Amino acid sequence: MKRTIIASLAVTGFIALALIGCGQQSSPPPPPPPPPPQAQAPAPAAPAPAAPSQPSLEVTQHLKQGMAYVSTAKNAGTPAIFNENINNAINEFSNAIKKDPSYATAYSNRAVAYMMQKKYNLALDDLKKAKELKPNDASIRYNLASCHSLMGNVDLGFVELDAALANGFNDYDSLRKDPDIANLRKHPDWRKTLEKYKVFLN
Image 1 (cartoon, one colour):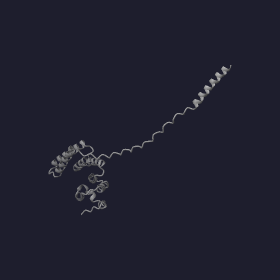
Image 2: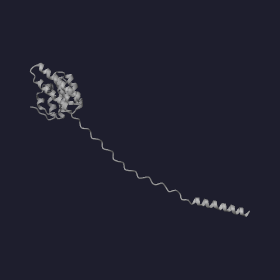
Image 3: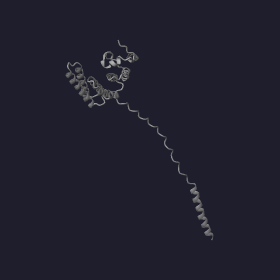
């Protein structure tokens, strides 16, 4: 009976030692701290706006040839020569537009040729397109003023003349003598519009 008790005590003591040992085991190490946040890279700079493309050599040649035809037409001695050269000029300007539909000068020059043929509605369409492409071009705005003057739209003519002068138009000989803007020159607002930009014509 004593042996049984001693054995039981021994077993009990072993269990107690085991429990004590388990209680003395070290706790697992804490997880490492998270790495510090990295500084954000600066946002890339916005790309610079693309420079307006220049017309190709072929487009420029069409334009030059068209202007040569216009010059010949102005000095034509007969209606037949005039019409032939103006039609040739329109074809050259049209070819330039087909090659480069964003070339405002080609539309403006074709409009001048149409005005010489008294096709004012066609001229106005071309000039509106040219203005859409280059709204701050002084020559285009002056040509629009001329077209409106020829069509009797004096108020619109002054709007475009004002824009031409605001954008630096300084062909004073045209302002003095161009027959296309005769309707503007004889209007009471003519002098006031020019004096606004310190333009004084003799």
